[in-house]
Length: 116
Length: 114
Image (cartoon, rainbow over all chains, first blue to last red; front, side):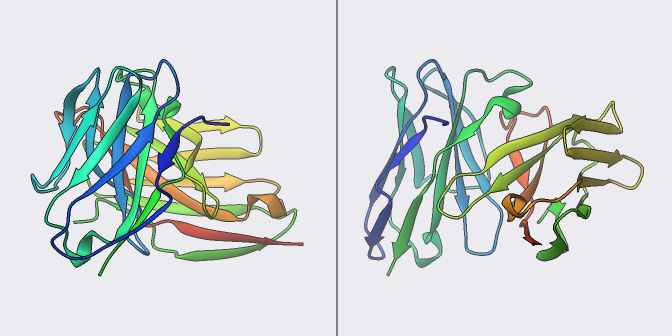
């Protein structure tokens, strides 16, 4: 069992609204990454947080923002929602941001966001 | 632009036979490669990885082969079992300012039939 949980499971929003997705990492995991998986695509890297600071960012606009908290929880916020934001959003936690973090990266089940 | 490509959306294999899943990449700076398995309604789970300094890594029934000159890797599952039926994602990473981001392919759906 990975111990990474995400909430909510499903969410429906309308264009222009704002949304906050939540992730609870395994205890001791100080690195969290967020990915967007559109239908029929592989996950796309949004950003990574390490010890509450952004550690890297993919090709996503600034309306995608995040927070990481000391209690191993984190948030993904998306402002001014667009129809193309409809996707499965995955968070993944790891005990390290070091070179081999990918081997120890555990994914949550995701939040399915639908924008109408 | 898709830097990691899995050109076979699906694969069907009989139980006990070998499953071979392929992956190609375009960025020669990638130096670490991983395979993930994903069941419906679950997040991807790490399966096996390989560093660019190796050309083969084995873990039980799973073996990953890397051909750097061809920018190609493959995952072999021998023998295939019905429980292996899932979507398999190939991913690659590089040591960059993007914080060790993983670049994923679109996935290959494997069906192992009894």
